[in-house]
Image (tube, rainbow, N blue to C red; front, side, top):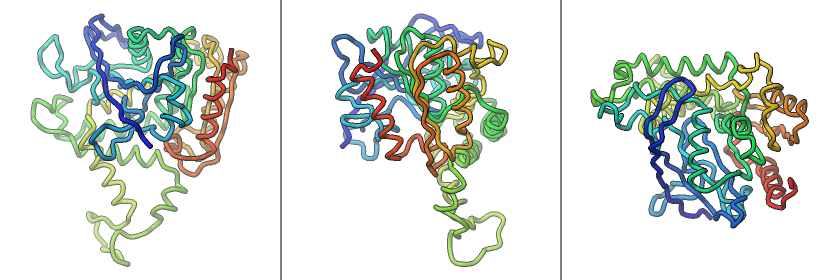
Length: 376
């Protein structure tokens, strides 16, 4: 049974210097917390979100049906990350469209909506802003930082940027950087948005429109990459949308998979911001901690002192198990304590969000160990 969650917001007046050279003079972070911080302030777990998620990690909103957090199966009382034991924090990243300062907010320097003028943000910038939030909450060290996909990149970056503040890093269905294929997918999605006639160079707010056509295509493309071939064939195969024969039309929907993708695209275009999509996919592209070490990941991860749990899924072709193994090998080479699981699951990249009993049991066992102080 889910519990009720309450979003909170915190304003920061101290400027945040960004990795790309920009500066946020003032900004706001929206976040949620679950459970209680113990007297030693040692049981905090930071959860980092992926591309289209938010601070609403667990629980539901009172009076709102179907408002469960995006990782509600993972986090809560009695769940793998047990909020009867841990104080869990979910933060909405800067540049997002779910409460934290982003392109849809007013630029205090101009008095106009940021739009395309919002500065480029990186994984490292998000981690720095999250660290400031933890300072405000009085948390010097995290019991764990965890995330899947882009959230896993943030967890990895936490272990490198603030090694003394992280005891455990849980990196799920992630990678130490994007390969060329992933960058290519992101670029096609961005071009779908920026070439939409309603995009207006990113200042579509001033024109009273939204580049929904571009957002739909971007989401359709992304959704294909989150699923495995097995899942799509099992769920849809070549089933027709209506009747038992083709319409022989280039415009109408013929197959059920087409209807499903259009539905996902339509839904996404109603709630997600186009400029946010551009910003977050760029943050994905830019992340590469080994770049400062001439591409040597082992040297990059030498900065980390945390213990690690890494999880990958066999049918995840966007963040394939080989990418997790790269991180495992680099950490082992640095004599770090690492647990690694490669789970044979049919669901593709989305597996990290789903109810695979082996996966949830693995995470539960790891957090049981953290709670019992086996890392002491």
